[in-house]
Image 1 (cartoon, rainbow, N blue to C red):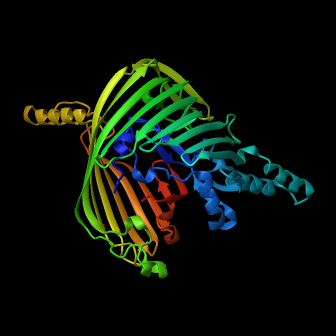
Image 2 (cartoon, helix red, strand yellow):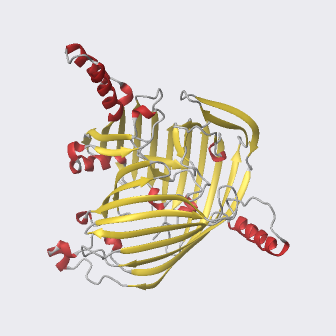
Image 3 (cartoon, rainbow, N blue to C red):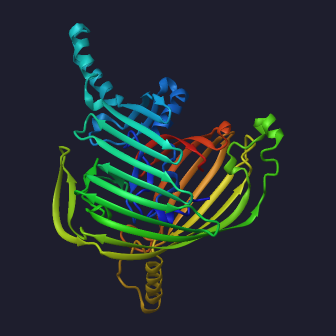
Length: 480
């Protein structure tokens, strides 16, 4: 089922989205308070170095491909990543990751050989110099230590040859009987906004306490977040970029409470699950344990959040623009204000229907999830009232609020053959970017997965985002 909890999580600072822009983590953060990201964009729970360790034996030469745009076009978007070393000792594990972009090297060598009169030692030496170009490479180090079964410490640092500054992050995770506690510090922290643009926040520190979902469906979260320094655009386009207000410097406290309810219209239970017959003949078991029951169900979530901002509630509106030579200029216009205190009521409804048990090799899985998200129910009520008023009194030239418009997320999964499944995630809005009441597709993502029956619920997932022009290969465990 489409993830309803994203309705509440999207208001906080720890929504991880998969992205090849980050080498060690393979994730970036969604800007809090913006529309709920696509489910397919949500990063996997397995840390990136362990994914690359798995791919080391799955791909030729242990190289994992990725695709993401760079500021300098001559570097190319294609890159290969690999886990160079991964020593472990007891509860401690370390991984060294390398990345290589071949396009610039191939272009330089072709140009060098074309200009050379003859292939001699001098020409070969000039070609070898291109291998030492540091802009071709990136390297990252990740270390994880688990002093107790419920506690983990993670530290990562990465550097890219074409960039002067490195990226570092430290994370503390502790699991309580009914809560998860996370403390994280990053310098800088990489965020992505609703338009697919990346922002580097110079310093970010956060504390998050989240309850586990109880049998009653109640769930709550509390978080503290402090950011310092003005965000900088990453790989900016030529158009003006306006900084999201949620990334401005300041200290913010936020709390949220939600209630979730599920109901099945019908469900075909798997009576033979875990039987001796399946153990003796594994090919009779489903390719994914979480996709083994055909059903039709509906679910809903309703919640509220409140936030308090201390300092930094008034900031210069800084626009960034890229010139033809690749430099980024900034300009300050007027000052934008953020409310020191704010509250919101949100909700989501989801309908899911699945046919097939994902056991046979053909035509045994078709699944559709349709989720309607209301980012702000009060704003939606005001917008609907204004539409009714305009219908009786005549239309008025008013720009529709982005919070007033609900978002419809559609997820279609279809088995191609055996463990191979194609998936399409899309988000539709009922207002256009210009503010007019016209439906449009805001985002879409395509993915192809290969389920690993031996892992019970694991798959190799390759996805492509046309909006971000990025592609990536991931390992997902117990996620669908």
